[in-house]
Length: 123
Image 1 (tube, rainbow, N blue to C red):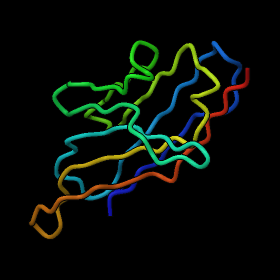
Image 2: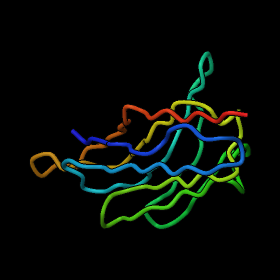
Image 3: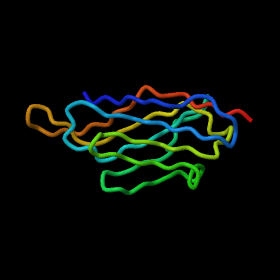
């Protein structure tokens, strides 16, 4: 199984910064897309940012210009730098990865999620 381990997050005042890191491990053949999603209480999970293995990054309108996603393909990690945080950014942030895993010589698709990390922004 492909596993994702998140780190970072925490409590910060509005206007502050936090960074989240996600590390992928397991029988990975290719790690095509890594991204971050978030879910606030009572709300559906929503896309925050994604990054492809060849460097394309996409952001939701609500975070564009404030958040930056980056990847280290060698280390199989993704970093989300969050600046100018707002109270409405408060949520559990989940790392997601899509690609192909290698199982006894066959490549099969995977879509894995981390357990989530809490980000709380106070006014």
